[in-house]
Amino acid sequence: MKASSILSDSLRQAIVSAALCGACLIPSLCHAESSSTTKATTADDNTRLQALFRKGVKAFEAGKNEEAVQVLSEAWAIRQTYDIGAMLAQGEIQLKRYRDAAEHLDFALSHFAPVESEQTLEQMRTAFAEVKSHVAILRINVDRAGAALQLDGRALGVAPLAAPQFVDPGVHTVQAQSNGESASAVVNVDAGAEYPVELRLAAETTAEPGPVVLSANAGPVVADTAQKRSVVPVIVAGAVAAVGTAGLIGFSLAASSDADKLAQLKRQNGPAGCADGTATPADCSAQLDAAHSHDKHKNLAVASAIVGAAGLVAIPIYWFWPRNEHRAEAARSSGLRVRGAAGVGSISVFGEF
Picture 1 (spheres, rainbow, N blue to C red):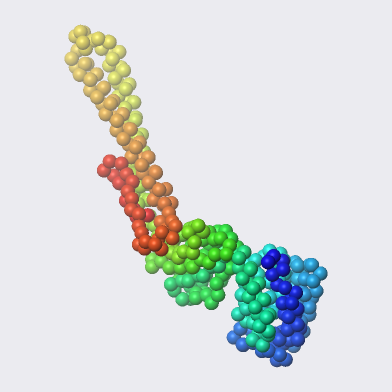
Picture 2 (picture 1 turned 90 degrees about the vertical axis):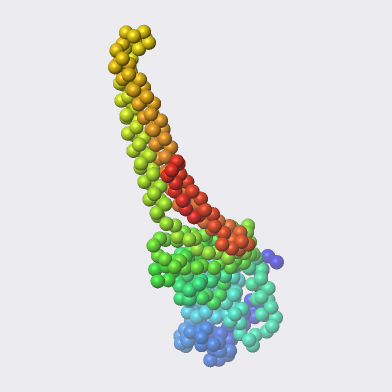
């Protein structure tokens, strides 16, 4: 079934007929919906709703899908009903806005008028099943009721959510916030799949939690927030890098000074002065000491460079190493942790990744 014909002509006619007779637009005349799911409308609102609905249907039949969606969206803003939602979905399917169509069809099915025909209901279910093959479904749960939820920066409401979230294939960010604490998950999803996303708010607020990246190849998985990273290892690694850099500079300068002194003594004693006895024992001893000092300072400069480099490398390794990479592995083996250490000599930086 092609997307452009998901809602058949008979289904569209049934929806139009029900709406224009007032099944949902004027509940006092036909089939009233529950007050918990609809908003009371005035007579003027009902008149405007019917006018907008007729205008949207005419625009759709004329092939003006963008205009139809715009007009029906105005009606939707006044009052959300199953018939408006179904007609909106038809225009959105034509425009390949499958996520919006899925949301409106989901609403239409959950608020379908019970007195309407079973055939109409089955046609809407068939349409919904086809639309869902173009989108992914996120079922978001948070370990704290009342937490504010966002999807790609769009407010969803507060936990727990009553309905699943439909998203286009690709990468999406889910966030939860409550009392200054936050959790987030980054999901990479495929069309036609469903992804449970579990967000656990951190117990401490000393650092911002990092995102968790979920691979679409792993299939439906449960997401958790990344544990907070401590800045202590970063400070230690930075101190190690600073000490190494200072040592490199200091020992390099000392080695350079020793090299100058050694060259001066060699010129003074001559090439074979210490061997044939023409140079004094004191000068020969000074020349030997200068050579030893030069070698020692040169070796210490090299060691300091290694220590400083290790400190610098340890910082990005610790900070950016993914802690919850591929949560499918975590689902198969809970409590997985990777521990590591980076350092040189007697100075090491330890962390849990």
